[in-house]
Image 1 (cartoon, rainbow, N blue to C red):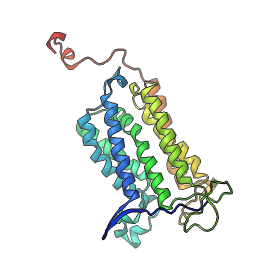
Image 2: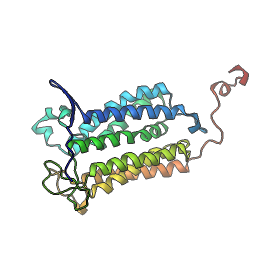
Image 3: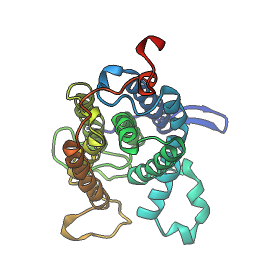
Image 4: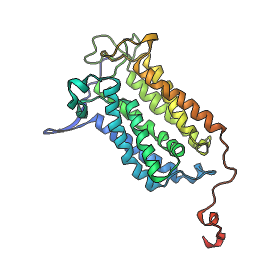
Length: 286
């Protein structure tokens, strides 16, 4: 089927352009923020440990995460995929409007941002990580849809009826791998994590939800890498591996370890006492 004629620029006013790709980042961050805030406000989800942060702290964390996504995503793209521009055109690193963001780099940027945030606010890293990762699929979904609209990161040639002829990719129909990733990393992964947080009660086990996210993302990304066209400027890696697969391997291992560790850790038998009772005050004094 032909590629749909969608302009990557939604609105152009003189030199100022609003692109679908930018809106995808905005939508992912805003929806993820409100979803995370809803998780910490829902006391039913925290019967044994209580929420790991206040809504106000989640509001503050959004700025840290936004910076982590942008800085980490850009630096990750440069270091993992186009390291040559460090020497040939270092100013290109700052030209984020030209495109080029790496999910794995963004994930590392978010990790650094959350590490600093929990240090400053004296919070539990694993428990806050459970909240943050439960909201990440929003950004993954919109980001992959924006990749499709931009006609980038297409798949390998295919003879399946839903193959798409992408501009600049030749005449052969190709897998719309961006949509595969939007479905798996965005919708399916969100539903799995939603089950973990709202039905299975796994927010009471430190790091399990975060581990499920890391494991699930690595699994889905590696599966789609089999039909996604590798970047032409990258070398051929052994055993049919791709850069995406190799960068996902630590996430796969780390996620499995977090799940194993969290399921073994004892859960408090009783819910946390209110502050007044913990200090020895009678209940009537609250």
